[in-house]
Length: 132
Image (cartoon, rainbow, N blue to C red):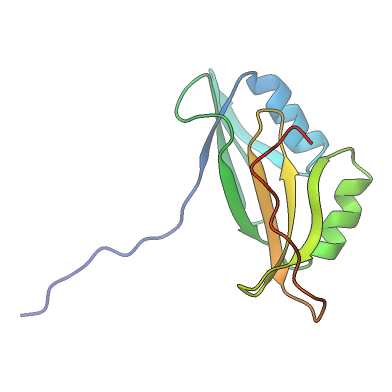
């Protein structure tokens, strides 16, 4: 007799925010996400297949780090440089095979966007500081 196991379908981080309206404005106006829905102090923003939940005043702590795969981190970097995003670190290669950029939102959450590493040397991983 074979046992059935549940498959995991996806993961959606829930980020605690201080001001939902300000956070939605940052994600949609600066980072290129769209507002999917909002009810009370809770909402969903997405960009392509990446979805984030934003919760005003609850469900988590400021300073969460997320990792999102993107098709071209260099192209995203160019886009976000021109939008006013707070970029903690530009595209950098790491030994685990990804080229990442790190962006900070209004509540200190660090969004790691990554595509495949290039042939450039590895860089230093940034500290946990988000006040840079």
